[in-house]
Structure formats: structure tokens, C-alpha cells
Length: 499
Image 1 (cartoon, rainbow, N blue to C red):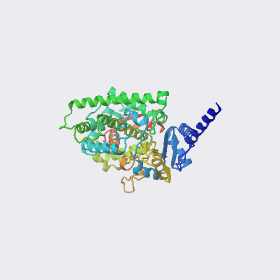
Image 2 (image 1 turned 135 degrees about the vertical axis):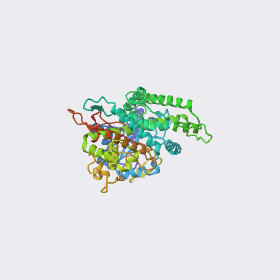
Image 3 (image 1 turned 60 degrees about the vertical axis):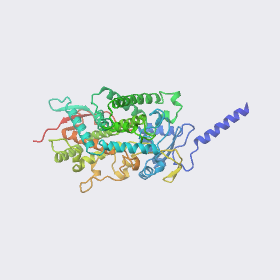
Image 4 (image 1 turned 120 degrees about the horizontal axis):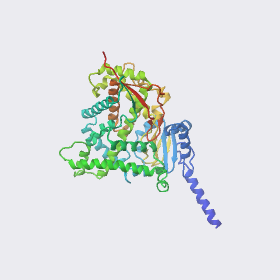
């Protein structure tokens, strides 16, 4: 009996020792508790600050710009400084993506898609996606046509608001852009354009909003503590995660089935057709499958509507708070474009202040976010610290986009920071919202085009201001995968034509 007790406590002691011991020369950070790791310390700071990005930023103030953590089973390194972020994003040793339930459950047990895959599989699929999206508009004139078409539809939708006799209406801004942003990408992917009144799509976007508000870029409880999938499926978020992805998968599968009915190998209409043709080709590699096509569409559907829509939300939030920025942008639009036609992407080179406003809107939004997590593919080092194989490495973009030492007044919405003395747009190296190198965001061109043209088209036709009798909207955000603005309304006024 005593021997069994002694043996039990000996084994327990060994477990505690090894479970709380950090790897040699691992980046500094909070102490690791048995099983939990640094989860309690991070959660305490998150509750205090309200955001995960600020919690890790507080840790960086204490431990330095490279912070070492362990949350449940996941060993993590958070980079909060420009030098570390740039080094990690440009080194092949960190080209991996995390493994585990969170990253595999979303595609039913096997990592698929292009956002969370790596190595040869990722390279083959990313290459195919970029090549064929370019053929169907990505980076060419046809992409401009799609964005310009959606900008026109957006302006028409705003014109249909219930304006009073004084040409004034009140508009909730959070849900104003999502469908139009999605259409610019989905037209290239599947040749489909959705109506902003589509009930099924609105329901799906509502589910995605709910999902994004309840998980983090670094995972969630059921991924960091996998046993919770079985012990507490609702509390850990696992049940909701499965339900929402199942609904999204069913939605995309129905669209693909419709596509297959009219598919003609010699008349490719969009990306789906190009992928279906590859599936029937003798050159098809093992990484290609119908499930992979659906996973790519899911990645694009989620990412395409998430970040760009929130960038627009933060953009118009700040245009309400900084009316002088709005007025200056409108003066430039009137001088370059006039009022007889809508702006186009061809006008962008002649509209530096409008372009700078886009850069500033993206900075303000992405300065509250993390990068998509990377994974060390082998034992290596970073900024003088040892990084064991399979460690998750993630960038806190607040460290580059909201750095007071570099930007001076990062909390202020000031497009002028991107314009030099000659009036030209200048983008500093520390501007990192789209990443670096091979993992630079595939949707950068489309995202910036959307924010530019949607904003310019609306400002050409409307004034946006804080509704009378209400407080200015808060710049606080709702935390989640990426923070989103809190719901706010704008007083929308038709701009009178110049006399």
C-alpha cells in the first residue's frame, strides 16, 4: 500500500516537473503550470485589457518582444516587435502551419485548403489558386470590372435608404459591406453574385460572425485541451465549431453541385471550372480533390468577407470621428473624378490622399490582430532564442502597426503619415498588415482595391456623420479571431451636386 502511494506521488512529481519545465533557452514568459501552462496568466491579462493582442502586448513589456508561452498542449511564441516579425516571416524554417483539432476539424479530420496547410501540398495548391484567379480577374482589368460593379451596386443600395425630405437617413454600418465584398471574390471563384437581401447568405454570415467572435487566431479551448471535445463539447466551443462549419460546407457543396451540372471543360467560366478540369486531367497530382476544392472555397469565403469588411467598418468609424479626413478625401475625389461618373481603380494613382486613407484604415484594423499562426518545421533559433520543432509562432501586428516609437501617434487616424513632402504615397517597411515573403496575403490586391473603391464611391455621393443626440462611436472593438467594430450608426446625407 505505502509503496503504491510513494510510487504514485513519485510519478506525479515527475509529471509536474517535466510538464512545467521550459525547453532550454526558450523565450521568456510566464511560469508554466501543470496541464494549463500559461493559460491563467494570459487569461487574467486578457480580462484586464479586454483583448488577446493587448494581453500579449503587456507580456512583451515585461519579458521582451519575443514571448514564450504554453497554453494547454500548445507551445507558442508570440512576436511583438518588428525585427522578430520580419525575421520569422522570411525564413523557411517557420513556413509550417499548426497541427491539431482546431486546424483539422474544420475540414473533417484532414488539413486542407490554402490558409492552414504547408510544405509541398500548400505550394502546389497556392500556385494553382494564384495562377487561375489571375486568369479570371485577380490582378487584371476584369478584377477592376468586378470591384467597380460592386461599388456601383453598393452606392445604389445606399441611395435606396429611406431618406427624409432633408435627404438624410440613419444607417447601421457594421453589416453594410459584407455581401458586396464577398461578391468581388465569389464572382471569380464561382461566377456567382449574391443579392444583399439573400436570406440564406445573411444567415450564413451571421453564423460566421458568431464563430469569429468566439474563437482566436491561436485556436480555442477544444484545440488546446483536446479532451474537452468529449467532456465539455458546448463549453469548449467544439459543438458550435462543428455546426457552423457543417452549415458552411453544405452551402458550398450545393454551389459546387450546381456548377458541375453545367461544367464544360472547353468553356471555363471561373476558378471552380478550372479546378474541376484539373480533377479530370491526367496531370492531376495527389493534392487535388473535390474536398480540397471545397476547402479552398471555404478559406476564401471566410477570409474574403472577414478582414476586408472589418477594414471598411473601422474606416467609416474613423471617418465619423475625423470629419476633416472625410472632407479632404471628398475634395480630392471631386477634383480628380468629379460627380458625373463613379471613381474607378484607374483613378487611384491620381488620388494619393484617398489611397493613404485606405492604408490608414487597414493599419488601424490590422493593428489589433495576429497573423495566421506559423509552425517551426525543425529545431531552430529566432532572435537568439531556441525554438523547438512544432512550436507555434505568431505575430502580434500591434507590435509593428501600433508602435509608438515608429508611428508617434498610432491611435490617431491620420492618413498624412503615408504621404511625403511631394504629395506621393510612401509605405514604410514597418507597414506589415499583409505579411512578408511567400506567405504574403493572396488577397492583398483585391482587399485594397475593395476598400479604396467602396470608400471613394460612397464618399463621392454621401456625407457620413455622427447622428444628432448620440455619443461618438467607441473605438473599442469586439475581440475574436480578428477584432470587429462595435455596432454603430451613421447619419447618411446625400451630397448636393456642385452648383
